[in-house]
Length: 398
Picture: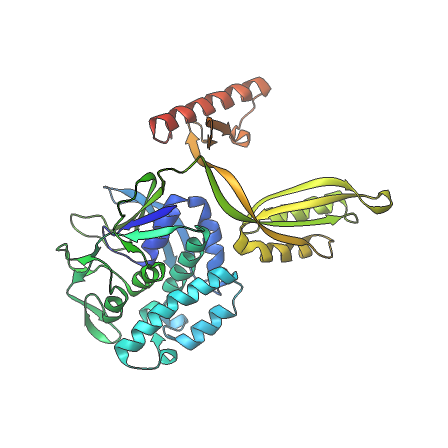
């Protein structure tokens, strides 16, 4: 899998997060949960929403923080690093978030000629940038093994007002972070690349340009920023490619948690499993009747979870059930490519690309109203036929 960024309007942390969420909106809840695990206070509101500027449509990642007077507007790198290191983030996400902030700290240290631990983040230390970086780290990790590339980056021009005074655009730390990447002047003034956006891109170490290797374009995502420009959309576009010889299957990894219980009432166990299903990172929860020693009837629980959340989900198993422990493995898995399509009547249909053709499965729980079995089956078949037709035409049905 390969991702190519086209910085039409520029690059900022919120634009990066919004672009990747535009490819997979289902990850928004888990990305927001990750920012809370990093210690982001509840008074900071986070939201992923659809957005259009009248020209293009895509997503925005909105962070609404309290006024600086209510929270520290400055935070030293040593303090922020310790906060992230001691957070409840999964190790891979935590390491990525620290690595992205390290790029920022090292650039600021060079610009201001001071030890890196003495760097005090100003704009980038605000709550919104912390949320952007942690959400970006989560989404990058969620993509699994992949490659990255980027098109020419608009530098912008003029001056930007900071707590250090007026600085040239791009800001000195931003310019350091962009070193070695393709840049150009598209004639639009102002700050086009923020320090946070530049640090995220530096962390990815993308290749310049999409390259000459044949690839199959699968998805396009658009992440909008907060600024507006006359004559150009302020978006970061991301293109997702598969290799030209990719099969109908995908390989990734999944956390598998298993344990047995034989001393918890069915009613209480059902309630506990519902709580586990609601946890961030949980993919599926199943229960299987088993017979244990001395002929005792019990239940085997098997939970699939995103690897980054497996340990946290395991802790949830100890809270919600009577088990005294659990088995945890990270296993390879092969899955067919699939996507969700919404058809008339707000029915979600899952389109699966199988080796021998495309199939569709409607979500029957979306069929509402007082309808009998025959009517439900008719609605299901119509929804699946509509979704397959839309897939064949290469467009979504609304």
